[in-house]
Image (cartoon, rainbow, N blue to C red; front, top):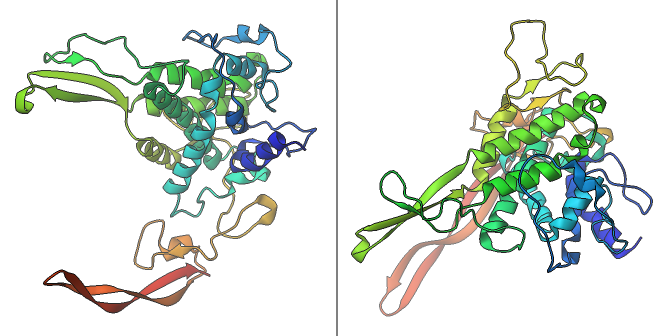
Length: 377
């Protein structure tokens, strides 16, 4: 196995929830996340052409393939993704950043839950369409949008830049559009062209229910981030008089996006299996509400995350730190799944009762404080 293949195998483990195959010289990974691993090998093409915005472009698969093309060497990509990579190589280098940001936010949002985003690394759950996989699919789609948009605004890539369509236009209150507005439309376009390609390249009559679920959850992730663009303004004038005010649009921090997606995770809709490609709520009530494009959807029931199950890649909650006084998901009663918890007393020594002595010294005492640490049995 060469160096590039080795790097790919190691880093892709972070995102193999979406993959069902193992990593070797003769095997292909199906997750899109590993393409960012070759970011250090991106070659700058001075004749790069930026793809037009708009709908899905299946005609890209007809572009010629160069034998030395690094995009062609990335395992697991469909033809459309390879063509997109050739046209936007610098942007593809940002996919690794998107993957890392998505994983970090996932672990942050679920740090106090029974499932804390740990078995995202395990391929054994890849074939299950659970609430957890719905969240991962959505947040990774949104992370690509956010990362690409911020790279465009920062001038880190040559394929895109700021959104200048409103520059110099006047607002309702006399302010002027100026500065570098985030090019959200380009980020949404790129995410759809890239993330949706494995399902979009199939004929509609050849798509499965799982394909429909994937496309829906990716679109939900993008819809959330599309609604998180805010107007920022700056005053100009003598002593802050705000004689002139310029404004621009910018995405809010990605933590807000992941927080909204977690709320949707808790309200996720389970769909019925009896429809081949249509998303219909599970149940016998014919008057049930239709699935909204704002909902996360899933097909399979989540496994039991309370107890360790090596076969399913589940580590359980034994040894997790819990809160004995909380009534939320981090409480020992909930997190420990009724098994009880152990309590350990730890002592911490730190400086206290500090005083300033003239001149010029700070004198402190050393105090010892005890702290109870509770861990699940």
